[in-house]
Image 1 (tube, rainbow, N blue to C red):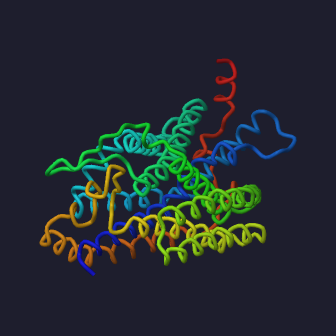
Image 2 (image 1 turned 90 degrees about the vertical axis):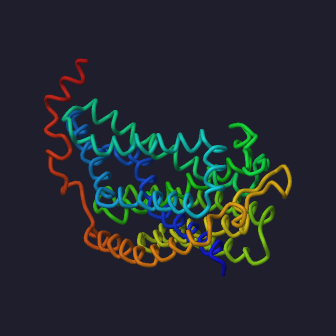
Length: 365
């Protein structure tokens, strides 16, 4: 295997890791408004608001120890892309400027909302932070699928010696195939997040998350199956049918496991579904990295966009030493914070309670 092919595979693995790990973070953030509502019952308005605030705090706590570490996979993938395939990085980030900028902006909003939410004990403040978490989760979950689907479908790129130049506009990126790709990542991240909440909680929250995961898994199987078959028939190779089957079976296992309340198996199923889908996209793309709709001579490949051989050698040695350390540390973090939580584990102070003064003030505004 050439170093160019090796680093293409490394970047694919990094994005697999990012989508599998950050995918449930996005799902948790998207589901906060739905699973964060108070449970049905004979509650006063103040009690209902207090319970809802505790539920939302519990939802955030499920990803609290790991969400920022999961984002490191994106930073590493972006850094590897920049260093190994500078031409690909430059053309993609200029051509996909608007969607990638929106993703970056949404991620910044999400980080600020999660970090600043507990800083001020005010109902409205927490409400706006919850909106920021939602926006920072919905936007990337949709646009990542749109972006990667367009890499495979092709965009208008023209070779103007010595550079490749994107000659299209924002609307070129919005087409039926890419939109289905966006819906695929959106739906599978929602399912992944619901299963993760069920896996990390107990009591009523676990019950509610399990019911939502069971419904979302069926929708994901339909949407994702459509995208997988469309991708294979339009851009696939003979052997990539295996990846289609693996990804589809992963989601199918998640559907069955959610019905049986086996959250661990269901989470593994959605993880396999995500990994199989990303692997399918990269496998269909190889050895190209950005297909041009203006002709084969304008298409970017791992060979006409790569860095020098010496650069790739240095990167390979650095990755060989550092990658096992990073993976071991992140695995240890997940092991330490592996226990389930319930709403009873959320202190009143952590949820911004007591709410008596806040509720009265908010209702009079």
